[in-house]
Image 1 (cartoon, rainbow, N blue to C red):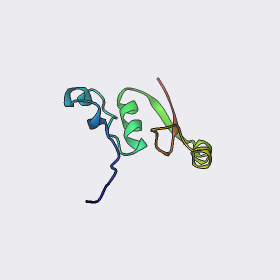
Image 2 (tube, rainbow, N blue to C red):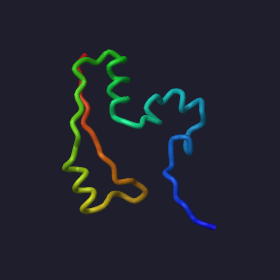
Image 3 (cartoon, helix red, strand yellow):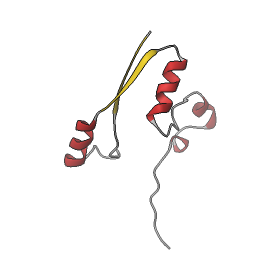
Image 4 (cartoon, rainbow, N blue to C red):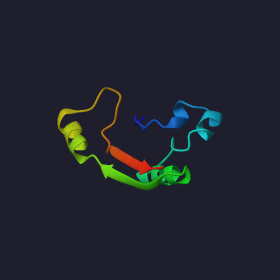
Amino acid sequence: MAWTTRRRTSADFYDTKVQAMLPLATAKSIDQTVAVLERAGLAQVTVTTLTSIYELDRRFGVAPNHEHQMQFLITGQR
């Protein structure tokens, strides 16, 4: 039998009722976050990719039980 490791998702931690209240829990891209913020009334939403943090995480590793992934700074105005 082959052993496979799958990435855990919000479904592993939250029931469907809670997931329904977390619109970004299953987001596949940062664009979904931008869309939610714009629908909430923010204007001039910008995304800055934090590539230096990504590279530091690649070089030195991430905290236990965390994945190496891109992080973003998101800003907007009301």
